[in-house]
Image (cartoon, rainbow, N blue to C red; front, side):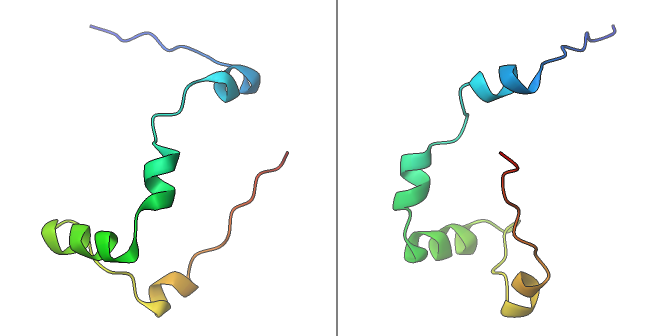
Length: 61
């Protein structure tokens, strides 16, 4: 059974409701993050060396 692909314009995408909870994200403490990492075997704490490999992504608006 083939799935249909829905195409959206950038404007349509920007109007979509986010699936993330920005308030919860912004209020999460470092201690809560450490607890989540300790409780989930699929997560691990990033080191300074790991973080140095990331590049900051900015909106092109």
